[in-house]
Length: 75
Image (cartoon, rainbow, N blue to C red; front, top):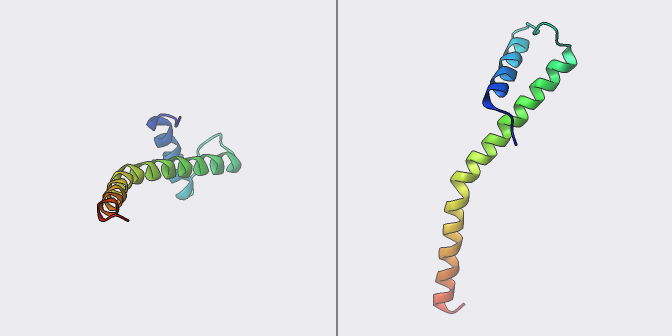
């Protein structure tokens, strides 16, 4: 289960600070890198999930229609 959006937003804010040359106080470069990698992972999971919800139903419908057409034609 992914953490709440709040933690992802907080991590994204940290990443923006690092990208602009500012390191959040109290975090080592390795910790900042870990946060940045996790933000990318969380964003990637959401993007894949969103795409799947858009693409899979349409693809499944297309495949089912093709199979039904094949069955009607006797293939």
